[in-house]
Structure formats: C-alpha cells, structure tokens
Length: 137
Image 1 (cartoon, rainbow, N blue to C red):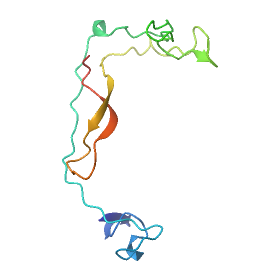
Image 2 (cartoon, rainbow, N blue to C red; image 1 turned 180 degrees about the horizontal axis):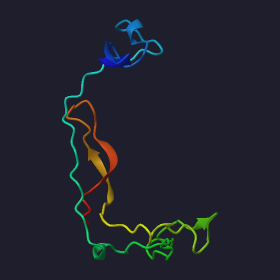
Image 3 (tube, rainbow, N blue to C red; image 1 turned 30 degrees about the vertical axis):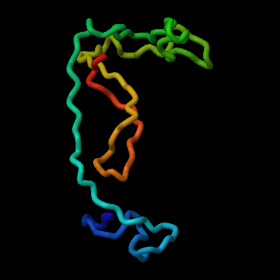
Image 4 (tube, rainbow, N blue to C red; image 1 turned 90 degrees about the vertical axis):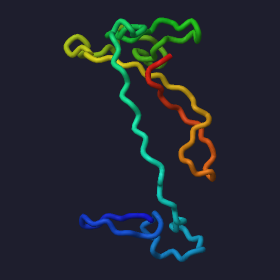
C-alpha cells in the first residue's frame, strides 16, 4: 500500500504511483504499479566504529596527499593533487589541517559481499553489494 501526503495527512493508496488509483487489477498500463507487500524485516542499525589512536593508523593522517607510488599497483596511493594525470606537488592539501586538527580517528574498510540477503523473502535472490566492516583487517 503506497502513501501520499497532502495537507499534513497520510492518504492510503493502492500501489506506489500517483496514478495507482486509476489502475484496475490485472491491467498493464504505463504508470500502474503492481501491489507490493509491506516490509516485515527489522531495520538493522550498525554498531558505532571503535575509536582508534592516531598511532594505529598506517599511514598517519597528513596535510598533503600521499602521492608515493604503491608498489602493488604502480599508481600513487592517492589521486589528489593531480590535474589531467600530472602531479602538482603542494596542491590539494587540507586547508585547515593545522587550525582544526582531527580529534577522533576511526578505521573502516570496504569489501565485497556476494551473498548479501536483502530480506528473508525466498523470492529475492542473493545480491552483490559493497559493505563496510568494523574497522578490522
């Protein structure tokens, strides 16, 4: 059941489209949405990442981009400070790095999850997503 707001009220409608009330069951018209079942899965709220000491960060935060070459890829660790592929040293540094230094540090790492379940509904197959862990390795 879709909902529309009007004048501060929620109005129940069939389907998700603004024209859903004009669609008859079984019709396949432009603008007609099929009926949807309501979500019944609980909302998962991820935990807060643990704070880290600056000494745990490798490399440590720095004012200007780390343009050193990554031996694993042959490319700079960071792409900031480049214009049309040409490195311009001293550009793209954080303007207020010393004036407003970071006070809290966190680590998050992204990884692929090829068997992610969006819902417990068996009609929806596993999905591939990129997600974040709790800052571990």
